[in-house]
Amino acid sequence: MGLEGLYYVTQIVAVGLILVSLGFVGLQLRQSNRLARADMTQRAIDRFIPPMQIMVQDPELAAHYGRVLRGEIPSSDAVKARLNWFFTMMLQAHVGGWTIEQESLVDERTIDARAKTIVRMLKAPHFKAEWIRTKRRGTFPLAYTNYVDRLIAEQAVVGPQSEQGNTPTPT
Image 1 (cartoon, rainbow, N blue to C red):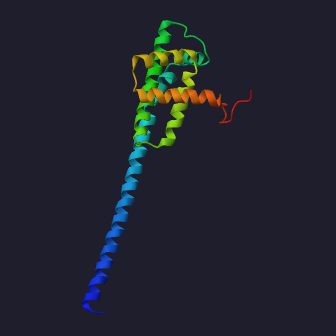
Image 2 (image 1 turned 180 degrees about the vertical axis):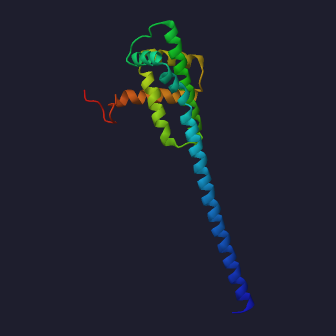
Image 3 (image 1 turned 45 degrees about the vertical axis):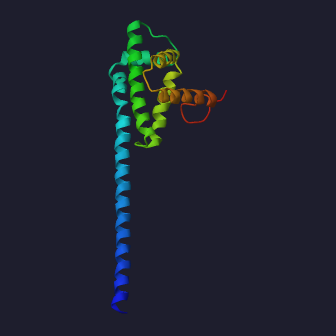
């Protein structure tokens, strides 16, 4: 093999090494993207913690919340105002997670549990009325309110789910 042949072999080896290094850069980029998505997912989940801590720290409000979820009317204007405030905080946490999920910045598998929480709240007549009022005020982006309305409609079609799993409740 002459010098020219050796030159071509070294060029082929150099190109191969460049391709291998590009492959490693791609793998590092993919791993970095996964870590960023995991961080954003955790941040989206963390948005729900402060509103939920309110219920843990205030057993009386938690009891009112449970009764309202079962369809009862809030016992006073003060309780109604606190529950509406809690509902708004939950929606703000949800819309934050939904927004970054729309940009593919979080793991889309995590939005389902948060969405089910919101849908569960919206089954209660009190929170359903507050949702309608919230939509009228234009508090949240139209795309988000349409998304939540679709969730409600889908739940109405699917029917209630049992508490122990995802199987429909027998009628």
